[in-house]
Image 1: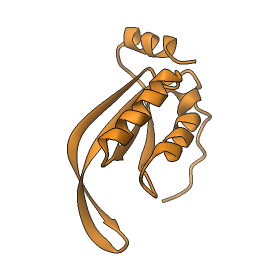
Image 2: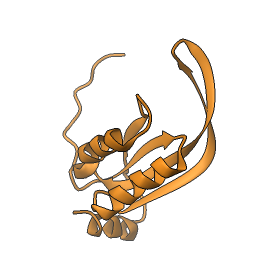
Image 3: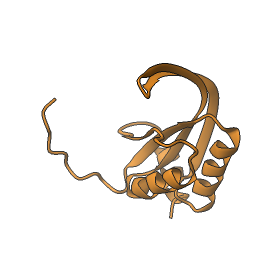
Image 4: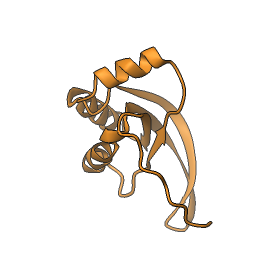
Length: 115
């Protein structure tokens, strides 16, 4: 895979951050903290989902909950740090996906609920 130079992200662009956990209480703590501090407009917790992965050289599967966090690009770094602080995993999955198209009225609602 070759390295590509990425253009700077638009800080106002809507993004979705995804993470998983095996704990309902951790999922709710992350969601509550993100929304109450206005880092995210909405966090959906869904599952259980089945994850299959290699951990410590062993094929592993587990039931997890997925958090879908709606925010803006400007808040992604702070969200990553908060998730790392509150998460119960040594190495949590945290990925951010910029949203390029969708319901503009919803995007405005997200942006208005972020500080």
